[in-house]
Length: 312
Image (cartoon, rainbow, N blue to C red; front, side, top):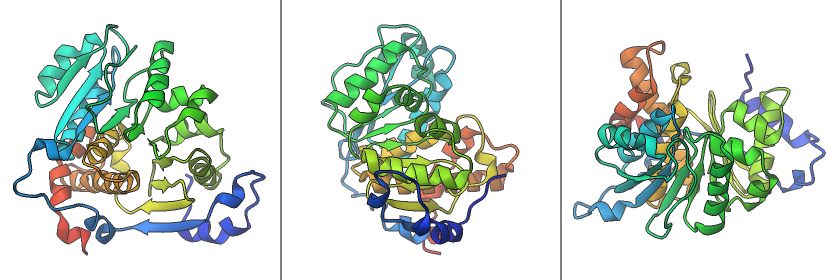
């Protein structure tokens, strides 16, 4: 089991030689994120607000056999407070999405089994792409189109990260301040295999600085690495969340926050914290062993309401 403490990072990092041209650009600022930090980032809603005040998100997700990823991510996005959500999916998933999530609007791709193109970008406040999309070559071109066209915040997960790992062109076209949410395997495909968790964390810091993006390196005490060299360690979550679909839920949460005009940093910090807190609440009710991704979504409301926890 690979474990590394914040103290170990702080002790080793200033003297670590990585033979990297961007090593000097990393400020080595490490932080631990707690409830009181997140409480200050969640705004109170105006009682006269309407759905247009909370943004319109576009989620690009799903392929044949993986429509569940789109469902989980879409539900989490809406549960996180987005005013409107459109989901672009392959045609095979239309009935699934319309029945599973009646609150979402559905755009179907011309292809039945995978994503091959997108429509207008102008009406959306944030974009999320990756859950269940697969690695078809035509889907890779959708990423290229998105990177060249969209001016709104973007979160990338799962196969979107795998496609980026396969293409230097996509890496260098990544929009500044995008959020990438890789698990260990996806990050190793992106930045190369690491010998241990410590080396992987340093690479994540480097990658964030080099490409001017946010890297949410998922795992115990998920690390959010920032374009200015900062690194924030999350304090919520439990091993029960190591289950299929948990990452799709996190993508939806962060997308929902981005649509509401949270900054990329605040969306990442708040999303990761609430995701973990909802998982902790779910584990307390159902046990870590029985926890599934849907349980995290079902407990997001309680996570938002636990202001006493935030301030504790």
